[in-house]
Length: 500
Image (tube, rainbow, N blue to C red; front, side, top):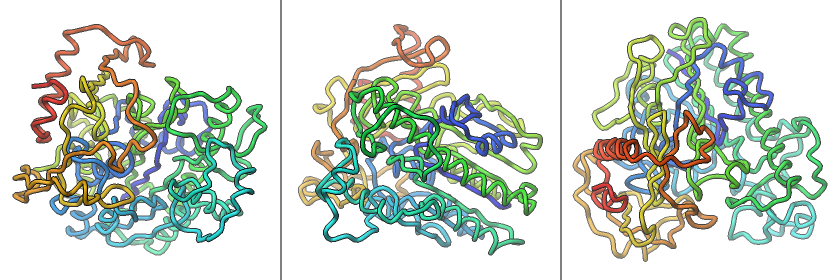
């Protein structure tokens, strides 16, 4: 088997034509026409690297720790496939793989190619950046004149992108196509082509914008993680720039699909296309993710799977509830490998050939320290602690790193050794009090709108009016408790969420 695992970051379900989106995405639609399109697919752990740990390991990690590396005891689909004889290659411009909090992920692959230049990747070296030129060039919302944040580096990186061929997503696809050409005629490989786009900043080459927003100010394509207080023209500008970046992603996907057309790749290559999470583009009066409740714009995400035999004819819609942790056992299953006993996801291939009608009744999702969220496909439920700061919270890890830094000595000093969990395979772990000032997400302010609510998606798909239904809430709480137990959630979380 040959597998293309195509991973886009922050690709909104509502951006794609196959899901009723209004952005022109002919190539995503072209893939959807051949694939099984999953209509009830949800995220797991958020944001970036927590989602990728779910994908690698097949189990939720936000219940035990925040953003961080793969742990020594973790399963990994790439590691298992490589050990079993499948060649796994990673092409990515997702620079978080190469920071403290992601440095153990890419080394599970047989080989990897890191494309530089996205967002604040410390790539372009400029000792004295032209601060005043940047100040005039960029909207005050996204301008920074210091290196303590990450927007200044983003502005510096952008000086290197002089034409479409320089854009990281284009170079990612260049690298992926080179892998396909160099390994033509071979079998037994998985290629993960992963791009940071359409993650912010929403910077696309000229020609991908569509229409005039009425905005006439400096560059505005990098929203803050906050409530909407921009003018209607500024909102329209940010949304238009996101749409332009989605079109760039669509064009690059088209290059891969063209290669499959030209070389008969559809006959022997499986494709899995998805994202890590969505992104609020002013819906619910919010920008971005992490801080606010995880509305479906963030949590319900696209998934398409093409299989040369199982999706023959294409155009299948899958209504079964699925989530990110199901990708790991699916990728293993494509190559004849079975998931281990600690994996909590399920292969999705039985949904393609009719062997199963469902793989799960509940999906939990969230970010460490925030709400515990759940859906049964009909309802979504956000459950918050009564007091976000007073309820005890601990990180369990042998790899104490945040996304851009190691844990501080102050964080490590009160650590105790915990006996571990079944999934740690006998290894004890550090139990560290989760400090409120730790350098973990959400980093652009604390949690907001932290109230427990239930929504009925059948009658309220936009999640605008909370549902008062004690029976439905009790049923979903019971399912949450069972899923927490299946993932060996720490005992204090049951108290934190009043789920004892």
